[in-house]
Image 1 (cartoon, helix red, strand yellow):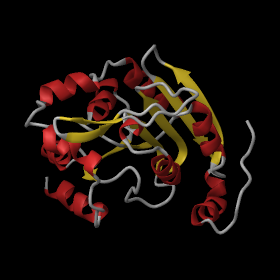
Image 2 (cartoon, rainbow, N blue to C red):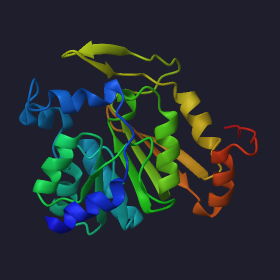
Image 3 (tube, rainbow, N blue to C red):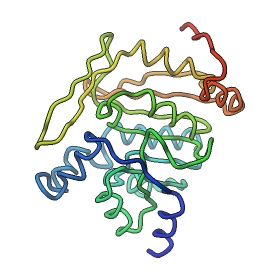
Image 4 (spheres, one colour):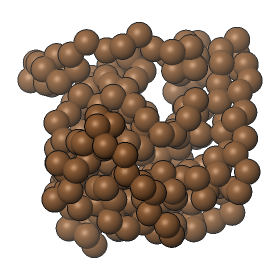
Length: 239
């Protein structure tokens, strides 16, 4: 436990104050929402999209993964269940969930998906499940996932992107909560405008979930830094 606590302090650094919508889970878990109910919402290790993720990671031979948001660290246990040896780190913005993971001996730190506390190319794959729809936009999160990943960004949506984007915010249990439908074509244009992206594909899971694979070329990291710092203007690549 001591080693994990030191690990947490080493990598977290100073976190930006959470925005109102990012506090929903911290305010409600163990208050208006039980851990068991939250667990039911997330789905267990046998959930189809989780199984597909682990099979893909194994097939691709990935050796390291950052799971953001880690939530109850379900996928950590999924890798253990399948006997897949991989360097795993969970990241979550909710202190209650981070503390819960640390108490279980799981490598997890507190962090924001829009500003991950890692150097460029730190993990071979960045994995984000059921989170982008709960943000106030996807651009910052996808950009930072691409920055930190060296080979792939793996995103699972629980709301299928459509042609028309709808930013849907409401108050649930007194807290702001987003449930957005994004424009699929806009997402594609956005990820292709990043010079680190080499290719992408959509994988349909079922009528509810869809997976976005963003394949990367870390050799373009220098060009990506220029892109990130906005010192040059790149023309969007057409599909």
